[in-house]
Image 1: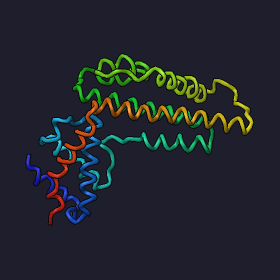
Image 2: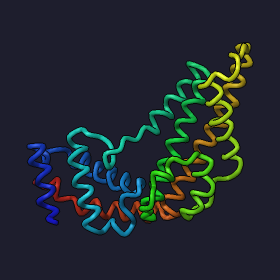
Image 3: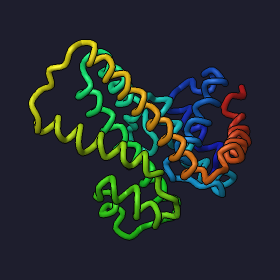
Image 4: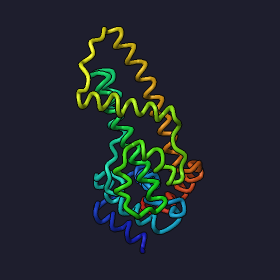
Length: 234
């Protein structure tokens, strides 16, 4: 593989690619490397290899053309989380919990998908991804070499996914007639509890993906970015 030739192909596609802001290009390259690592498409060992550079070259072309998404995938986690946070203040608790449930499902699937790629599990990954959230976060994640999340988190997730979301989506109870004061107190308590678990699960997922080596791996990513410096040279 000729890396400089591949990078020049980006310039041909864009016409004036090398005149783009160097900081923008370097930030995009770093984002691509981190995104590929966190999605499980490259490993720590790949960061110094042609495999990482080839993937970055292909992805950078798409990013600079405005086609977002690592490896052709679109990540809606932060958008869904934003909808949940907006809904709890402006629409209602039930709508918010439905969005929070969607967020946790996306986060769970992203984590399991990454771990499957890291371990190069090629035998029927689709069947694993079809499992329910409880299976994914207990015996499936153990098989993939990780300790399951803490029991308090799983209990909270059960309430959100099964009691609140399913009850609301399938209309399994009458609408609640609560006073404004009661609604406000409920909203604050629920928001605090759910957001605490959002923070916990993000930390948990990061620990699983990086295996306690996030700082070291990010340093290696920063070194890898330097090998693309000639992109911005005149």
